[in-house]
Amino acid sequence: MPVIPSPFSESPAKSRASDIVTAHIQREIRSRGLGPGERICSEKELQAITGISRAGVREALRTLEHEGLIRTKTGPGGGILVGQPAIAPLGRTVEAFRHLAGVEPAALVDAWLELAVTCARLAASRATPDDVEALRQIADDYRALNLEQASFDAVARLNLGFVRRTAQAAQNPILLLFLDALIDLIYSAAATRPPSLEQRRELVSVHDRVVDALQDGDGDAAARRMHRHLSALRLLLLDQENGPYSGGPP
Image (cartoon, rainbow, N blue to C red; front, side):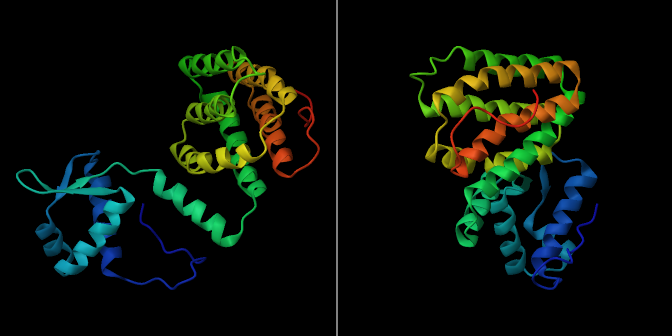
């Protein structure tokens, strides 16, 4: 599928050398079905095919390598290879935008919540028995914690891991990509207002109910229960009264 310049872009579309190189490499990867580590072409071949100068090609390759789309290798069998796109650059971009634009933590949680709810709904019809078993194990691990003494890190890792594993069960890599881009920011935001002991205890049953809904294939219940799960975090970040989880029937 060709990349069409967005009408919402702040700058007009330009036929830059980097755009031409990027389009060619993306087309080669798709048309040849190349995977990570497989060779695309050499720098000289890319120059000849695109008609772009050596300097222009190298500038484009540096950008693509930074984004994780490609990597370059010298010596025998070297050239331009398919990379392993990383989530970290996207997360850093979101974090930089949050600071520069003054985005409040609650806005991050809104985005996280909506992504997680959508993933829960999809997972109800797509989760495999292995997915359900993995989520049940996370719920059991959380139940086994001594919630009075458990560190914030232990609680947060299991809770965020539960949401992330639900997203994996939704089998939509784009949703998972954006969820992962926010996960470190959500962790940092939650650390500023950790849940009370009562709220920690509430999560035991919340986890179980989400997994039950996924096992039953009930998308509406899964979405509703995931929303209930994450609404409390949003309330904490909005500095509202700390109390038991709110938000509709289980």
